[in-house]
Length: 466
Image (cartoon, rainbow, N blue to C red):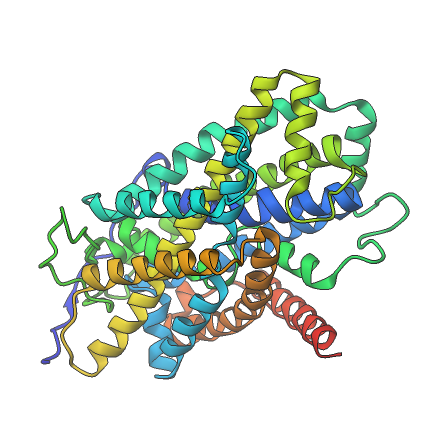
């Protein structure tokens, strides 16, 4: 395949902030069903609010992590995976394998089915509900004309409706003593412990920390989303279309075919973009993510802390619903279950969608390198349905315990985050001009994150081996 000539374009001017809102909604939506709904509320219901500081630290870590990923895509107009491939040809295979191993487990859809089944009085064989929901949402993505627009709208509306609903319930139910416990928890002071409670499973704690936001390779999907949104040099990139209703014949290249000159005008445009996308990500991802995790964990603490059976599975969510029904009204408890079920389902299909994009991107990169023909749209939908079919098989085989499936994936993903943190740092220093590289204090934060995930991953693996 002959190489496409690289065109020189100007670095686009940044639009107003209100037009940039979108990609961060997708990324925070990818974390709603794991960290926000399941893991942090589970920990607060069992150990109190003294661990909530870690949720805030975790989402703060991911904010800076995501911005380094966005930095590359903004300047290059291509995903970080293209840059990783230039570093070493074997890396695409690493991302294909770890994206599947970390996120193929249908823990969120299994949990969603439990909550929705509870509404209709179905307490057994709820995995059939999960299977039906996966198929319906898979069809939604397949039939939509523009993949990015569907995902953005889907996650945006779920967040805009669910987060205020949860916040209002929490504020109504909270007492003065509860608010005091929350304030202490934000600085790491719990009931009889400081920072980490005695007896907590290290794997579960690391899982919650890794899922304080998106987690694993999902953070890298941000470079795909901002490219599709047309951020920076992504304005010139192709978009994935539906194979049913879109222009499936259109070739979408993984690698950027444009560049810009190093001049004052282009550098100034980059700086405006950088300031505005930091603001967008801080408002949508960091603030909304931290607020949602705190409210959901706080609500779990208020309604289920020290309750019977909360150490098993996701029974603490059912107890939350019962307590909300008793304290407010039965219909509110039912709505809570429905909102939780929809958030979990949206996360599951969002995770499958993001991982499918990651896998397809890396397959396309290798096929481009070898000169083979491919169609990214067709490959994407094939991989998406492979995820859905694998999830169905897992549930039919009887692996239906949601929290166990989520923790299994999270431990894998915590190590995957360590790997891509290191790779992204190296990539930005190899590929980007000095004017576009991170300043010293951002570098220090990334070094701190690398050290944290290295230490905790080592502890978890040692714990499992011993």
